[in-house]
Length: 259
Image (cartoon, rainbow, N blue to C red; front, side):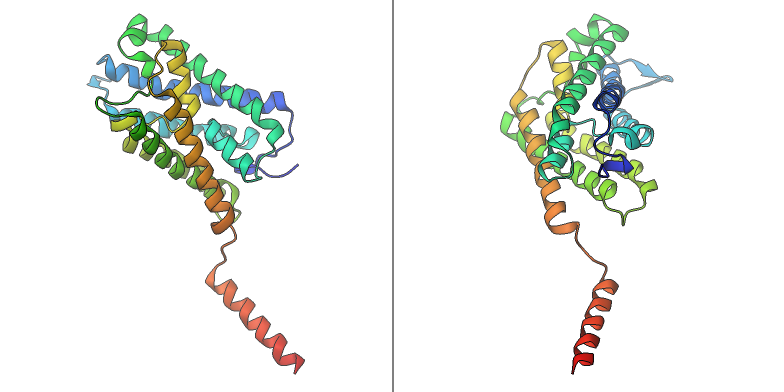
């Protein structure tokens, strides 16, 4: 076995890690879309109306909790863009990719069904179950770019804090959750801020709305892949300046000793 995200081990029982991904994706998508539906339907939380900030916080704080709860089990990918990016850069076995992606999609669909049950038909008919859809006047091209950029940011943070031994493990969950919240806030006004093909597809499938579907799938895959490639090829091998100086001094000493 090799080490995966957050200290998890690749090569575990596929049913075990698949279940963790299904449950984790279900809870993440449920948290964010339930709050989004409440906002659209103008339902309150503790007397105040729900707004877009609450949606971003629900996704971000939900991810913080799930990374700490499930990160050591499956790596807490919860996102096909993360899984495929890691596999493409050799940090995750390709043989596990189908199980992870299917589990993530199933979790997102179940979350959308749960939101429908909890909030009734209005959640599907008026709020589209919190699906990520292009804002008025926003085309598929803008959605593609927005989703690619924010997913690049999210995956860069994930591979930085969850795979590099130089980063304190205790900070991983907070860093990744904060990154997701920022991504939702940035892309939300344009694309709804899916940052995740499973999160986009789950509500779309149940609601029967597929606006700019391809952009919500392709954008995160491109952004995530580029981020993982950048870190793997150019940043992961970085050394502290003190280490480089020590190595240079050792090389000079070796040269002097050979004279």
